[in-house]
Structures are given as structure tokens and as C-alpha cells.
Image (cartoon, rainbow, N blue to C red; front, side):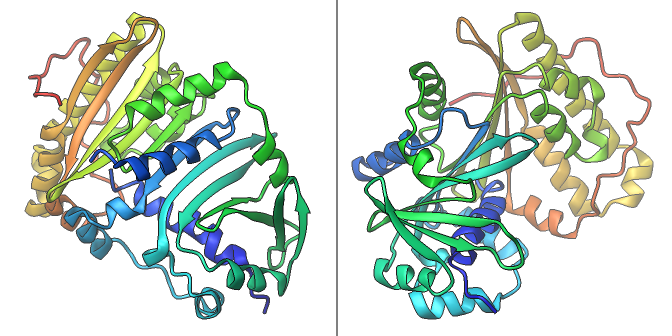
Length: 358
């Protein structure tokens, strides 16, 4: 069996990023510099960028509860061997991760910047067992085949505590690409807005993100009208920040049309109200455990929808809170919330009480 460096590096992207999406302090000068340097390396033609500050998340009480709640991945023999030979444990040694998703025709590629405690000599030696290396563009680039496939991944140490990884065809092109100033500015302004969040994702709309996100909603929260409006957004951001024993999640969509933003506010408020009504339906009361129903209701009641005018763009912001009680209930929940809102129309206009904003 081949021992591959990608198991440790790419597994970080796949496993930890999935967990980190659930998790959402201003950073000090040193962390801020590292963070900004990682953002500067993100390709401007990316369709999405995900960032996770694991060093900050590890200090949050809520994340400890989230980790205890989340399903544990099965132990992998290859990763265990990698850990033994390199000493790198992503749960302990990975500090930050920035991931860019790149469109490659019908496929996608990942470009990842990993910051952490790495033993450069041991990791390089491990990669050369099954892979190769070449010095191109001032970096020693390692190429490692994936087991059972023709595909390879490439990685290079940018510094002793930073690694760049990709499954794209040429890592050196990504590292040396000159981005267009306009594109860089568009990404940077959104990164700056999310500066206080240790985990976030930024999507540049391609007429598919909205539909995909809406499709993940539980049955009682789905709305074709909502999907259509989401597909009219130019940018979508998701961010989370642990606060004491809860997680504050902020989702924001940007568009250029005032009418679209106003309609989206009404639709999102309408979906929340219908979902609350559905959970109060007698049939749903019988189907759901009381503690589970209360947890869903608490999540919906914490939801706050608002519109933000930024001049050329209009944003719709949804804020809600995930509590330990919700996590506990979600662990016992069915795959979907029972849908008692079927065939019910969304209100033409909805006004919900506004909560305070920070």
C-alpha cells in the first residue's frame, strides 16, 4: 500500500473544512499578517474561498462541544503511518487553512494554503517514497500520485510553517499567477468584512450556488422562490464566530437590485415564519421529540433578517445562533424536519421584530 503525503494534507481540507463549516476576536498583529498573506495567495479567478483559523477555534468552549458532538472519522492506516513518520497531527499542529475552489471546465480543483507546525525534512522524505520533486520557480515542488488513480497532487513549502497544496495540473502557475487588480479588490473587501470570524466562506455567484445551498435546507425550509432569488446574488458569504457557549452564524448575500434585496428579505422572513408554524403543527408535535422541537424553535426565534445598503450593492443578512442544546437535538434528529408547510404560500410581505446588531 502506498504511503501518500496527500492523506495528511488533503484530508485536512476535506475532513476539517466540513466540520469547520458548522463552527463560525480580532486577531493579533502576527496572526493578522499570516492571515492576510494567505489571502493574497488566493487566485482571483476562484469561485469560492474557505478560511479556517484552527488555533483560535481550539480556544472556544463551543468548538469543544461541537467536536464532541460531531461524528469522528474512522482511523486510517495510511494516515496513522504518516503521523508516525512525520509527527504531524492536524488536530494539534494545523493553525490556519485557506482553500480556493477553481473551475476547470466541468470539474473543480483545489488550491490550499496550510499554516502550522511542520517537520519539513520528515514530510519531504515521506513524500519522496512514492513521489518525485523538482525545483521550479524558486520552490522545491513535490508531486505525489493518488492511490488507484492517474491524478496527482503537488505541494511546496513556501516557508517552514506554510505549505501550498493543489490537485490542479501546475502548482507553480498558481503560485506565480498575476491577478487582475479589479478581481483582487473584490475579494479583499469581503475578506476585510469577515475579519472577526475565525471561519468563513465566500462564494462568487455562478448561478448555481444559490440553488445548491437552498437544496441543503430541511424540507420545511425549502422554497423554489428562495432558490430563484439566491441565484440572482453576485456574492454569498457564510461566517461563524464562537461566543461563549454558542455559535453566532452570519449569512449574507449581495446583489445590485434594490427590488431583489427587498424581496429576499420578505421571502426569508416568510420561510422562517412558516417553519415556526410548522413546528407548532399538532402532527409535528407528535412526530418530534419535545426537546428537539424546542431546539429548532429556539434556532428560528434567534434568526434576524436585515437589508444593508452599501451603495452599488445591496446586501441581505441573516443572523442566527446555534446552541449546545441545538447540537444535542440535532444529533438525535431525523434527516429532515417534518414538513407541515407543504402547499402553503409565502406571505407577500413579512415584518418580523428586529433584533439588535453588533
